[in-house]
Picture (spheres, helix red, strand yellow):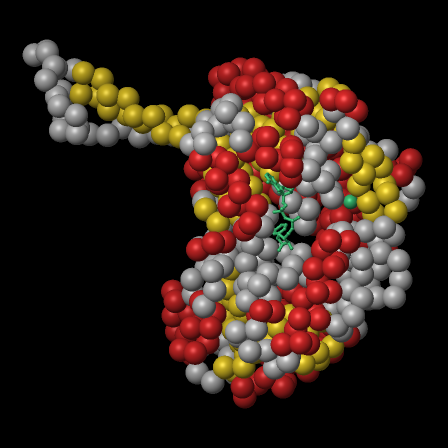
Length: 490
Ligand code: NAI
Ligand code: MG
């Protein structure tokens, strides 16, 4: 497909209009399958971010005060509008990000689903009444924060736009989205579809741009009321530090180094299927990927053999060819993966399959499996964010759980076993926000998702995500006929 056929929007989306960045600043988004530019896109600076936050602030009261059922209907229409454009959105995403078309299609169907799912909650955001005795009526209301800033990464750009924007809107917030500089196109198109569905001007604004200055300006802005970020731990920390200046709440989803524990009583062939899917989908650029296998020594060779056979059969090519795996998103990510694979060799791990870039244009890297990995190796401890699996052996459960939990991350973990008791014990003992049993990627739009430890703060998805977009107000009304006299905290 040519760029002309794609015809992507490339400006800032402010108050329902396309405008250039101040001074005409632009960035160029690239097709990672060819390394060729797709199109220049506006690159927001501080003044642009300021304009976007002002637009969102002005639009907020009216959106907040809209009848909840009407707000719900508009948000539901966003879902339907996305469904009507799902093929086009998938093509844009696949081209800009690199993932196979079927995966992009799934991301965008799920994006529609976020809007549909949260739409139904718009008129059910109830407070409660608190029984404090006959002299006072006391009740709570749940109110939106105001302007929600959303910083989106490049691995699931359109899907994560929806994951954050849908609950923010339903709760009555307005939003300013800063997509990643590598993948701005789906967010721009989604903003346009939000407007088409009836979202008032200024309620959804998009400022493409780099982490500095756009992301920094947005997350440090005094009139941003809450921040949602998905990305690296380092950037999450930087955002938290900046947010501290104005005591802005943050919801952070910061990736993981997720263990998959495989027991001899598991169906080894099925485990191999799940693990291959879980590490090679989106070329491993998934925060909840199965990064490190911990396998019982008695079934180690069997499992490795099956995963290697699958990996070696992977068909790899540009997103539009819709094969098993596409390129990495950018030269930087390609270099990161290449360096980690070199490091793995230096650390003494064995390359069981893959281990090299693919000799063609684009940021393609072979599905790679390392065996003989010591849990202390850096390749087993640091997030690689590429199609690179590490395999380590264990002898007993206590050791497996200790190694699984011996990390600063805690996003997801998985166990493969047919022993129900063991599965539930592991679910309790694993330090992660999500535990999968005999499957992977079991979280849906409806299930809360987020990290223990340094994998994050707060929860996305499910009804719990609404807590990031609502604050509680308590109202105390005097009913006493004898006048006042309560002391604070009484
Ligand atoms: P990053 O965390 O720096 O980028 C994510 C988003 O944050 C982008 O929109 C970027 O423009 C923005 N950003 C960057 N610096 C910022 C700042 N100072 N203030 C506000 N926003 C800022 O991630 P990067 O450098 O692209 O990738 C590095 C590593 O991060 C990856 O190798 C991977 O390990 C991890 N990562 C994790 C993701 C996840 O899903 N949890 C997604 C993307 C990256
Ligand atoms: Mg791109």
